[in-house]
Image (spheres, rainbow, N blue to C red):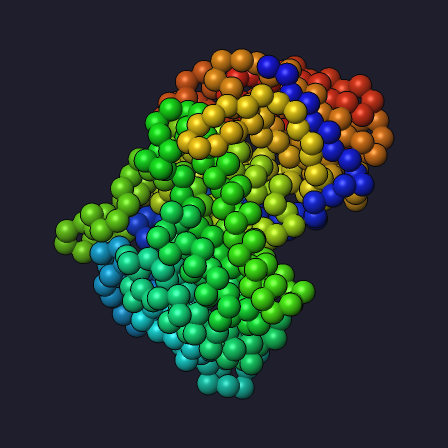
Length: 500
Ligand code: AHR
């Protein structure tokens, strides 16, 4: 199988917004408690933050982290999670059927973000609550002082405002599983008014309206249009959520791998809908996209039967164990996301730890990298600069209504460092790919680093005892001649070639 890619410095897609390499921490299962926060853990710091998880987070390289939910958000009273810990109420979380101790809240998360060196992506509850709580939270977080809420923050020990820029207006409000689901009209109106008061409260915010919870939602398309029609002047982003599930495609690899193509369609479609809303107004404003929940999620259950009897605290919920196949899907999705750099400005791999996470822990025990950790970490490490348009010649296959290319690839060039990275997934199950990439206008290239993610067994997983079973290796079949890079890509491999 031969594949050829041509990219040219003069044909850029757009500078990549590095917030596409975001993740997500929700109050759910062991994401917070036993995940990022576990006082008493041998590696915990004085804040109770797990040191081993912090180290792995830094290695993973997320740029922005969404918090506090998720479905949890739609029943959350943020006031419960601030102030002296011994006074914080213990409450039922109706989203996941668990007990929320509120020992971790807004200020703890902001501390954690500082140490992890990530930007926060906050969210306001538009389920049980509305504009009033949103503006109070914003005043608590971002106002310097001299008002009730900002002084309360200072009393709580946080003299300086948190200065949180990126805010999601609710979560998955189209879903019947959501606490206080809304119609597009109800949600659009609530989001518009909330955005209005938030903007009057604080300058420089970036606001995201909820799009559909899945591309297969019955209201998909109509929801985006109506919500954006109501909120167009107030918001900057529309969100997309997509979990990749075999029940939507089929069990075999090629079928499952078309989730990558379906993500591509999803991004293109939502862009078109946003632009249709702009066209109706003859507006030049462009709504950007925030894929603020995405991942493989099919081995552990969705839905109400997730609830455990007896209102447990920090139960094991959707602790998906990822295999090598899932790592290929995540790697392919990241390539697709980068190729949409002109409109996709943020993305959050859901979630960070334990709950469908790239990092897994044992409460009281070790932490390790799941298979999907690796393509994310390499993409974040080398995904700097401007994405270039690619012209690709490769073989194709038919599956799930898609004519899909065997090669999924993207090229990114950083003018500041002169470094470029080519990310390439060979989806062929049995054939090696003779891969050539010609990078025009960048001068003669030299290989700096080359990595290959491959395993002979698609089912291979990393676990506590064998945490490095699936991990990248140095790529040995690559050479460069002037502007052309040549490499042999193993069947079922995800690769990155860094040149200068
Ligand atoms: O990430 C897990 C859940 O998936 C989130 O709470 C929700 O927004 C989505 O349905």
